[in-house]
Image (tube, rainbow, N blue to C red):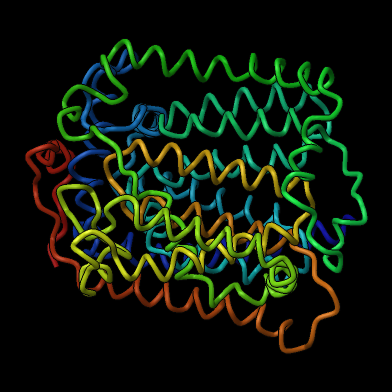
Length: 470
């Protein structure tokens, strides 16, 4: 066991080293003032760090230049107060959140070391993980908290551990990015499910899929014990809820007043977009779901229901490209290029969302039942929270999806597979990582200089340290 842990630690070091090999050349180049990530850094997050530093030890939370809760900025402001690093120094300090995210992911993945390495590589290559690891963006600090809570829900064997660690982690997460209060539901699910790992014969990947009614019925046995555990964990999540209530009263809304006129509304196309992104990654992870596909094929009614449900999620809301409605960037750029159906439905999402649904179902059918419920609960909670956000951008979805796919694939169990499938399970994520890495590099090399935005505080960043010129 100790040897396996040490080898997993070595893989984690390799993955973190790959991240820094990609990030450090950018940090120490003149590209740090170019691109969308640099614009967010210079207009919003760095100015907040400087403002909190100037106001230390009592920073003003009432109307700062970020739509997120302030813990990320407070940590960096504390570093500035302590030893006053340069801009690049702050960037290097903040990169520790990304290093922690990648290391935790590798250590949390079961399976072989080659699987750990290859499943982590797409996360390293994704610009939506790499860029927050280079520039001052709170995204990866929040993803670290999300992953930590999911891992805790999977592994906690004592109720006290789930309550105490879960309470602290959820509070830190909500203080970093308030939209992630949904993660409380993951802790509640873990409490309701308990820590038992007893599995029935129907959990075997070779067995037919149990009916959904059977699966749901199993959740409502031993109700008194489940209810006691749930109440304990719900109470443990109250500090995070109360913290959000504090900011809700301070701001008279869920974000600071200066951005409330922009960040409002909801996006009913979120479930379809979420599934479509997964569908776009399906060729690279399909080998992991092969046994699940065969189980689904033997249950044609369930397969048909899943496909029809995905189609309905696409055709009911408007799923066309629309900047004003928050449907832009990432996969939406492909949607923009393809003619729509009646000006309402995107053929791209109409194809990809059912593919994503089938891939998810295939993977979920192969993981242990308790883990499957936790993964499903996390995805449902995430999608529900994002539905009530006006911005349906890939940057808010892709990191979570890649993390969930890595966890699902690593926890999946297979029947007797061919050597071809074993090779495909290694090559698929590697090819995706290469594609995402090339896209990230191209974006960095072709980005235009970051400009001052009316909604930001660009001048405060320039006053702190002049920007490099290419």
